[in-house]
Length: 482
Image 1 (cartoon, rainbow, N blue to C red):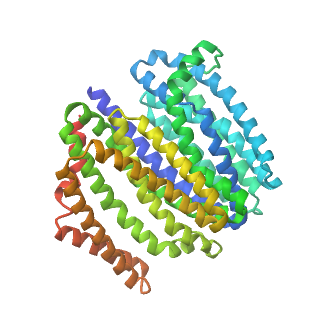
Image 2 (image 1 turned 135 degrees about the vertical axis):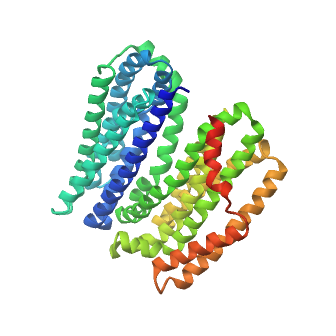
Image 3 (image 1 turned 90 degrees about the vertical axis):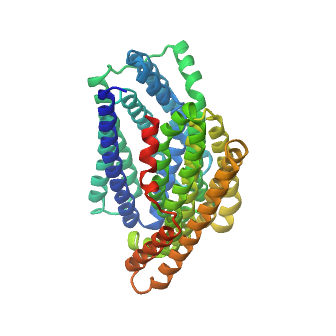
């Protein structure tokens, strides 16, 4: 890799990291301020509209963005061909999907306010069809700073808008228009950058070229469809089966754990090129790398899940207020989804890196089936808690599926034995930390967390579970990958 490429990777990493942090912070405040201003039921209506529209937005992706990023990275001369044809496909698909959304929300008989919010949020489907694609183009040209610009524009517009809306009467329609307006600003910004820096924008309607692009992209697009339906079908079924208040209760907790889940997902994503390189050069080190990654994932996520279980009520009261107190049992369940999602993401990246991407498609399809069936069974019985249990069940099945494949094909007995002992020590240290936090929680909750984490680290250091190797393992793996 040339010096220029190293510089470009560093620049891309810097801008994406800054953008990711800023975007998460601004989006966190947007959802918290919107939830507190609207109240549980109105926030439920808004969350339903977001979920319903977002769930169908995957139908406009079709894997075209991932294919374009890959091909442009190999040869930038093909950018015009990919962009012009993909924009034509996406324009047609976005119009069809918006029509489908409007048709379904009426057929399913949702209340008028819910339908109006969905109508407005469905416009976001048209916008995100292009915005997401533009970001893939930036990735192909290795100019991620433009992706950072687009993300910041959208989140900044949402954050600014929510500050202004808090001065008015709480209306879900206003927030839906804000959501759509912020999406439009991001789309315009992304399109302007593409047209100015790379290629002029126009729509191509060459059916033969469309067929070739869709043939390449659909396998990836199907996986994306499964993932988005998996994430958001719970909110739509909750609204239909239990009403808008449970949707607000569920989403208040779910928005918190989505942020937490980025820790494990970011870690596993960073390991993808490491696994890819080791797969082609050193299969023995590959087996050691996945075992180390599992151990480190447990080291990070288990105390988060344990502490989240104990602190759920206080976190809900601190962030959302008394009106959302019913969300704390849901949060206690969903923090364990964060734990499982980290491992699911790790195995997904591992199997993709080892040329077994079809396993991910099977896993996402399996998770979707379990989640939908669980929602249909549990939501009528337990409302928002039922939706949380369904998400946990789907992620648990996913992790078990991956573990069965991994242990049957890739592990060695000695590695698995060492890993099991290590995971047991981490589990016992987490239990000890949780007991300390529970005992001191009534005195001072910040002090109790600090004491619990100290106990956790001390036990693991004494057990030789936290070593200097842990601080350098990822750096070393990345160096080996190069």
